[in-house]
Image (cartoon, rainbow, N blue to C red; front, side, top):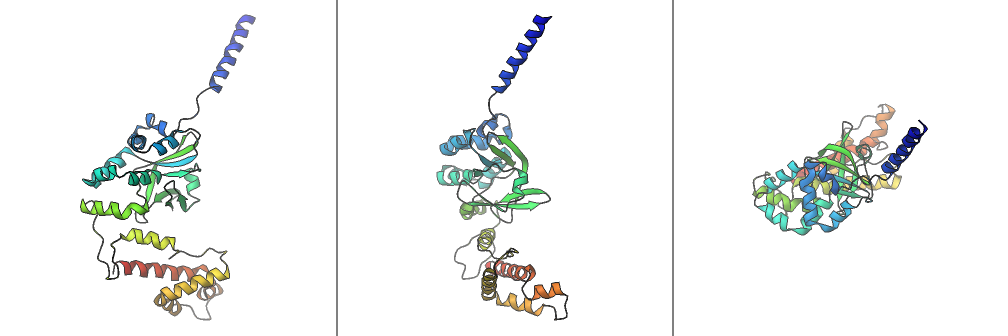
Length: 287
């Protein structure tokens, strides 16, 4: 009886040692074995981008990876048509595109993404985050936010989110859109005024406006100097919008909250002027 008990203790100890020596969680690249719906993109990375493949193969790498599904990769190739081969031979485009799906140094869950508005990618270009119904979406173009199909997958030191769309870095959008328009996979942009010498899709112009702060409300803790500078810039760029805002302002008998907004002390006046400026600029782009 004692011998059987001793044997049981020894076996339990051996089992404990065995589990402690279990291999670490797989790397991002190793997920292709378990998540076959993202294997196509990972295979392309492995075949075309040695640096990124090594980065995502290291279990110690800390990052967030937005993985395009195989169906997303297939659709992208189909929409590019004859230009798919050109894209495949463009090493800089492929590198920028795949690195645009990687956020280095941060393993962000979907809950973490809900607290952020933008991300710095490994491609050195910004990826934006849109918050919708307690679930984040990411985008490189404001008119096409992409939901996360499968979220919070752990792989080594990384978190992986699966998407049903392949993202295009902002710098490559004009070129890729030209290919899509030529292949009739994207409608051509509307006419521009004579000053618009280069036809750039509207969503790229909106990104440029967003980066310049157009149409964005100032934070509550903005300094007086910042507020004054923003008001001056808005008045110079959109005098019509300012005049409309002034005409719509309530009388002196208005309640304190409304009077504060009309006087420019609250977020309402700045937000209205900024939004009007953004609309005016967007309309001008397509005038």
